Every structure is written in structure tokens, then in C-alpha cells.
Length: 252
Ligand code: ADP
Ligand code: MG
Image 1 (cartoon, helix red, strand yellow):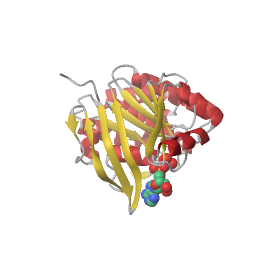
Image 2 (spheres, rainbow, N blue to C red; image 1 turned 60 degrees about the vertical axis):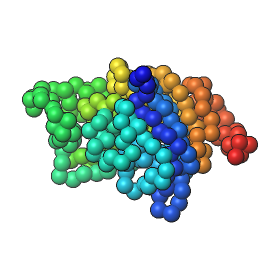
Image 3 (tube, protein in one colour; image 1 turned 30 degrees about the vertical axis):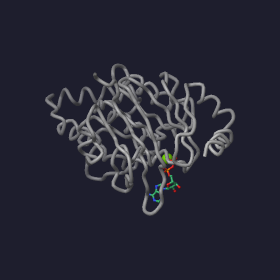
């Protein structure tokens, strides 16, 4: 029978250089689900995101990644993106020489975009309006001279335009003012309107304002040590991670 799973991560162990960071991660994300990942700095959240996207800086030592019914463990980042995986980076790169709209257009062409440039531009303008971005930014070089907040909004713009099956947001809300976080949350809501899924790495409740997470996973020292529902976000905002560390050492 059809297993209702979009992304399945099985016993993933991963390292950077000589250092092992992920020590056996399991995750199962269904279509339309929103999963939040929390955890102290350095616990392995970004590593997990990068491993899901096959960033070559990170080495998968063990485990399997199944996406949309297919084993993608050995696929490159490009191929994973074509299959509908997307990641918004904690620190978006500046790319001189290619405009925001061309960058997005290339992504759409790679996926068999058929619509005219005029229609495409209209769509970009609509999404930029939703994200409260100035329309002239689409002609600027990708992220070059953008403020931190503008870079993050540009990531969300890409997500909305590429409409992946699963988007991974790595602290997209960090460094944003309160209004910008709310705007990003609205963008997320629009993206999630349907069967799309998301993994949201965050330290704060605000980005979840417009959406309802299905599961919250807390990573500590390369392992998921606590799992639960939305109420975990509030508990962590109030109590921090000390109790998580205690539970983790009790279970080691
Ligand atoms: P988080 O996103 O939870 O803050 P990371 O996954 O970024 O944590 O990092 C986990 C650990 O891996 C940290 O100790 C960090 O210093 C180390 N690490 C991550 N990326 C690199 C890298 N490119 N080179 C060296 N060490 C890294
Ligand atoms: Mg990180």
C-alpha cells in the first residue's frame, strides 16, 4: 500500500570534516505537514538541513533519505531540487551578475516552465507585493547589497515562485524585524495552502503566527531528544533548553 510519507529520513549520521555531528536522526514527514525543528546553537539543525539538500560540504556517513517514494540518498543537490526540495539558507549567498528574477526564471525553466516572460513577471510582482518587497528588487543582482531582511524575503520569494513539495527554512526569521517575520509567516501560509510541506528551523514562535505546526522535534548534540506538538515551542521559549539537555543525558 501507498505509504503516506513525503520525506523519510532513516538513521542519518553525518559529519563535517572529521567531526561527527548527526548521530542517528529519524524523521517522517507527510504531504501537507509542517514540522518545526528547535535546539540549542551547534546542535546540528543546519547540518540536518544541508544533508537533506546534499550540500557537498557535509558527509552522510550512514542512513537513507527517501523523498516522494524514491531513494534520493545518492542524488545531487540539483536533482533533489528538481524533484521538489527547496532550502532557504541561514546565510543567503550574494550572486553578482544574475538578477533575482533571472535566478528564479532559471529555476522554473529547469522544471519545464511554459509561461511567457510577461506572465512570469506578473506572478513575481504579485508575490513581491505579498512579501512587501519593492518590485525593482527583481532586477537587482541576487542578494548583492541587500539587507539581512531583504535576503530572507528573497528566499521566501524563491520558495513561492518555485513552489517545491517540501521547503526547509533554516532560521529564516533570524535577524528580521517583527513586521518582516509576520510577512514571512504570511508567505509561508500561502505556500502551505495545499499539499506542500515544510521543515521550519527556528528559535521563536512568531514565524508560526499564521500556520499550525503538526510536530516539533528538538535536536540536542546530533540527536532528536524530545518530540511533541506545538506546545513545545512555548515551553522552550519560556524555559530554554536546560530541561532538554537533562532529558537527553538521562536517555544516553
Ligand atoms: P545549528 O544549526 O544547530 O546551530 P550546525 O548544524 O550549524 O548547528 O553545527 C553543528 C556543529 O557542526 C557545530 O559544532 C559546528 O561548529 C559544526 N559545523 C557545522 N558546519 C561546519 C563547517 N562547515 N565546518 C566545520 N564545522 C562545522
Ligand atoms: Mg544553524
